[in-house]
Length: 272
Image 1 (cartoon, rainbow, N blue to C red):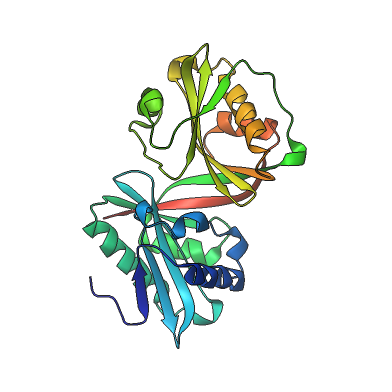
Image 2 (image 1 turned 90 degrees about the horizontal axis):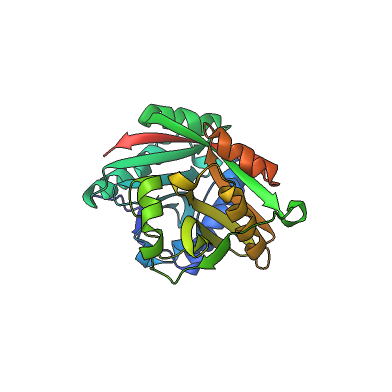
């Protein structure tokens, strides 16, 4: 892949580069709404790609990819306001597309904040809108624990045997997340649900929340959510989760448990 001299391609970032990305994010008007996984930028085992665009030694643009399954990769990016409308975003996207194609991914999801006029225009030009998600956040002070008969147990890293059936029936595949803390919800010793947790400082992010199809509609989802939140509040001041806007049942569950919507993101698919 031919990369311009002003672009540095990385499989992981060092602490100095991560701080540069943080500083760039602060310079962007929409920066506080950008979703960047800082804890994973320094982990080469995640297999993500990072592209840094420099001019006169200064970082003026960043694009990064994240993947959670073998076929699909997500991409986010930002350009310093004074360096926009120069084709930098398009050039970095092309580099990321070429790299992801070489690595065997079949599709890419370009993520943009729904309220970003420039981000939406860019995404609509390059991809096909697939879905929208709300970002919901709960502060510790708003949590109201529910009574539960579900036992939440954290699984050893890489151990998916107990939750494979849940993932296959809920997501259609087994998703590996070696960096995440994985919890299984057991009812009378039998796995009925699961949830993944990523911690960044005192912030927790939930994903991979699922209940066996045959066990849904019995209140186990609410119990699992309440139980894992109770565990996490020992280490986190806030807890966030993303949910598709069309999943009204899940939205109602989270909102009734103290979560509030803070942002929305559109996902645009690019075939590789």
